Length: 287
Image (cartoon, rainbow, N blue to C red; front, side, top):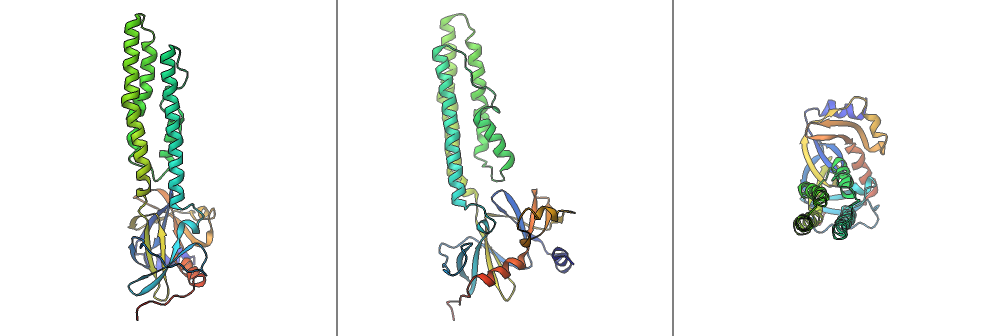
């Protein structure tokens, strides 16, 4: 009998706790889950333990090793990911400024604007469409950039039309009017949205400790965000997907109506057993 079948037969009425790590979805069976909590400000380090463990915490007179699931599966830390996002947004902001400067230069020189006016074909548009498609953590703040981004590119087309006006004064008035919309309205709004997205990106991760206990052993796993506690449906043949990862920690692949992606089911007994072997026992500070 497979481990996943054993779980389903013994605890089939219990739900799974679904959570995220980066843009991936995972679930752990609720049979050992005793609670969820915000990570405490202070976690006691354990020098002898591997660095995938942050240390130990004491909760209700019980000691829990804290397993960093991102480190365990080889993902960068949340702080590193947020830094990378900020640097990426800085680069996209630079792309915007370069695009607008070239538009201004073409207007001032009365020459053809040679960069794309398609909002999905510029450097930002190409990145943004891909980011929204593949990122489970797409910022709702950043989604507000659609309207001014499209208007900005539309204005470049309107400026091209204005350049066809034969009357010099009318032509200048119209192009100046359109360029003012770009520099005074659309660009400040876009840059403000980018800055807000950078500030709020970190807060989109509601890091949580999921507390597990078998009665004989305890473990707290640090995850990005708890999505739901619900039943899941095993995907037939889905176990092949788990071979892409470290198979000893996964028992199957499943789906859930609240999640658009496949969910990897974690072998809870295996990670608890792993912690028992790797983290030296710590005594509770209370009598």
